[in-house]
Image 1 (tube, rainbow, N blue to C red):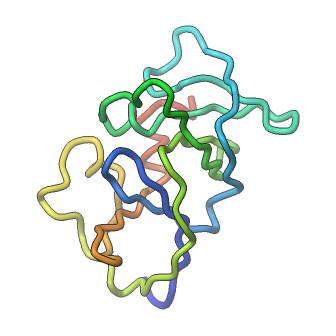
Image 2 (cartoon, rainbow, N blue to C red):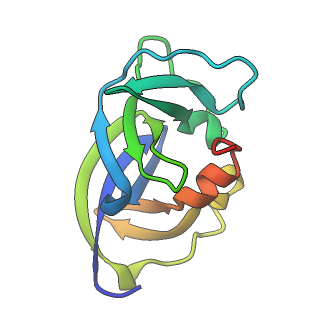
Length: 146
């Protein structure tokens, strides 16, 4: 990695996460979903995005975090994948930030479990640890694309 990278940031529980903006199609408020019987546990349902059916993956479930409290609705971060767009349900949308790609480090040992499996690196940003998500790993390990 070299040069500057622009990242779309968001929060899930106490995690500060980011994705390369080139992989983000759009961000929008919660939208009603149609449940999918017998789908993977991480799939919350399907949303209609201007006529296109999009799978909504709950990042809390994917990262094995506690469920949202009642009344707290998630936001949608729609990402582009080889299989088409997928919506990631997150707690709160952050900003687009620019970071030096050279400053990314491997995940520390304190990042464990499902989160460690889907991040490619971390960056110290304004007193927080920004974790860069790997979309192919995130999707591959959820069987969402199948």
